[in-house]
Structures are given as structure tokens and as C-alpha cells.
Image (tube, rainbow, N blue to C red; front, side):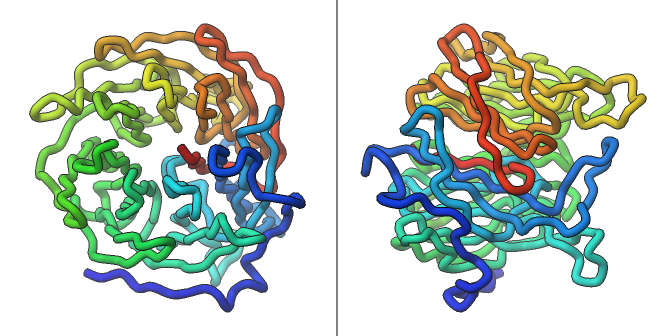
Amino acid sequence: MPCHVSRTGGLAASLFALTLLSGPLLSGGAAAQIAVSANDGKAVLVNGVNTVPDNPPADNVSIIDLNVTPPKVLATVRLPTSLVGPPSSVAVAPDKSFALITAATKLDPADPRKVVAHNIVSVLDLKSSPPAVIATHETGAGASGVDINRAGTLALVANRLEGTVSVFTISGKALTPTGKIPLGDSKSGPAAVAFSPDGKMALVTRDGDSKVSILTVNGTTVEYSKRDIYAGLKPYPVGISPKGDWAAISNVGMGGGDADTVSLIDIKANPPRVVDTITVGQTPEGLTVAPDGKHMVVTVMNGSNKPTGNPFKSANGLAVVLAVDHLKLSKVTEAKAGTWCQGAAWNRTSTMVLVQCMVEQEIQIFGFDGKTLKRTGAIKVSGGPAGFGTSP
């Protein structure tokens, strides 16, 4: 079924850059690396409960320059975002010309103290000055994880409350909807999606029925292979190595205080299959593979989102670094992070990790030397940072 497309040039008055540094948007020109953080203004944690605050700030994204130390915010642009869903709700085009940002929820027009399902992906032009939203597209209810293939010709959006994945072709900065792939009923929960580096396959996590579905890609044709992988309980984020030899899945579990897991998938095997699993702690919300292809960072809530008096309550979350060697997982190190943390991002040299922390409304910065993580600073944002995407 085709998706509705609406252009948003007339919304410049309400979707605009709030902050923009003078001069070029990025240091380092074409070689620059950016991160785009989606910040949800309508979600705060009140004694363990996700709550809409009084007079919530507008949802927005922060465009962050990773070429400088410490990283700095270059621009902040108002557009719809959402905490709900895995923190893979942002995808940056390979040429850094635009970014896609999904929104799974919005304020309820009938009751601003509540949120309801949303169904859009915004196209943010990163080359315009200031950066601006140039289009929005309807996807499906609960638009969550999004990814763009390396060729920059296809995008996929997981519609978590609809049981589908939306497919878009890309020409320049323009998206064209080509249909939806049904994966199950509305309770199957397609959450995150990731293309393999060669663009011939994509993985979709399904936290509703604890499956990981394999999609096949032939040109602009994307189909459900009917092959599902059972990695663990409620698979949520997914990351694929730069060489395309393995994928990693965080299994968030039921939030009952148990030590939850990360699973490794051999995607070169025929058919692909889980080959290793390791425990990392309570609720591994985010997972991001390092550019070196040897490490990943997992953001673990560690009970930091629990209410006071809960026996599994912790004062902090964790950033856990895992290594992959010969298709085996091992823990390298961990560091205390903030509260109710979501996504993470690596710099290009795999020496720095950024972690999104909802309660503190900041992005915490860690240095990584191959053995240890060390906190080095933080970037304040407006709203709670809840989705991350980086350029190559």
C-alpha cells in the first residue's frame, strides 16, 4: 500500500534552526563527521513513569560536529521525534546531505498530558543554511527504526505498532514511497532495521514476538524472506559490522531485574544464525557497532529507570563495550553513565563514545583507548536525547 507524501516548505515558520554557529556547518569539509541526536521534549521520568511534562519544549534534533574535541552542537532544529522505540530513529545519508528522523508518538490533540501513536519520517536537509526540514512522509503507526543503504538509494522504516516495514526509494534528497512489507500483526513490533553493507539484505528486530526477520533486497525490490532468527527475549536494537560478517542484537527482556543479553549473528552463514550470546545487565536499550568492526557499545539502563523502592533500582546506567573476535563476544569494559540512557554513537576512529541520557537531558562523552572507557564531558540538549545517527 503506498504511503502518503507531504512537502513541508510552508512549515519553515515552525520547523526552523534554533541555533547555528557562524561559518561552514562542519569543520573538515567533506571529511567531516557528524552525529544527529533526536531529542524528545514530551517525555520525562517521574519516579519510574514516562510522563508528559508541563509546558513541554518542542521536539528537536541536535547536529553535532565530531571532528572537534570536545564535540560541539552546530545547530538545533525543531521537528517531531520520539523516545518510544529503539534509539535507531535517525539515519544520516552516506553523503551527509540529509538525515531521516522518525516520530513514533505525538502529543494527544485531545489531551496534552498524553501521547498517541504517530507515523511520520522527516527529511532534514543538512546542506541548507540553516538546516531545514524539506519533506515529511507518512509511514505506519509507531514509526521507529530507520536505515539508509550505503548506496543512498533505499530507506526502510520499521512501523512498530503496525507490524510493517515501509520502503522508500531515494533520488538526491527526495524520498518516494514504494509500499510496505507486512511482518506480522500489530503486536509483532518491528522495532529496528539495518541494511547489510552490500545492500542485499536487511535485518528487522521484532520485540513483540521475539523474532529477527531477514529481508532480501534486489535493486529497489525489498521482500520478506520468511526466514526468522530467534536471538533472545524481545530483540530491540540491531547493528551490523562494517564488513558485513556479523550482526549484533540487544535483547531487552521483560524489565523484571534479570540480566539481559546481546546476541551475535553470523550473517555470512547460509542461512544466517545466532552463534553467541552474552549477558550485559538490565535492559540493554541501545547498541552501536564501532567503525573498527571489532567493538560495540551497549547502553544498559541497569535499573536506573525504576521507581524508588524497587529492589532493582540503580542510581546510574551503564555504557558497556563488547569485543567480537572469531564470532565470539567478550566484555572489554564498562563505565557508569547517566539515567534512563538511550542511544550511543562512535566517532570515526572508534576512540570516543557519546551516550544519550534522558533524565540529565545531556549527551555524555567517553574516551575509549581499547581497554577502558573514561568520562570526559557532556553536551546539554533541549529535551531528552532518545535517538542517534552518525555519518560515515
